[in-house]
Length: 65
Image (cartoon, rainbow, N blue to C red; front, top):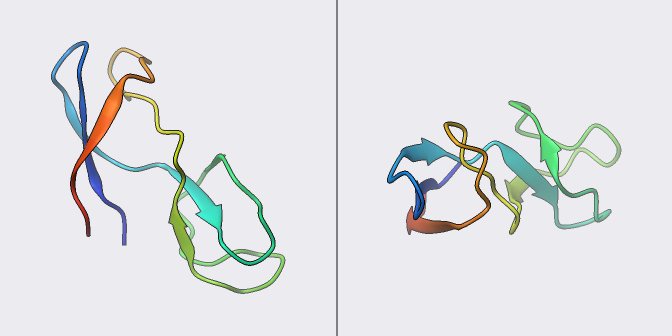
């Protein structure tokens, strides 16, 4: 499940789009997939999210899914 983030620059709220595989290390993927195609493990939110409105990386997790 994807967490909800808030952009500190434009105050937009958005769901995480960048995902990270905890097993094989694939990170930064912008995907709607729920599982890694390489090892079939569930994705987690990547630690590097970007605002979908303004592109800023100054975002904070406000709700974990």
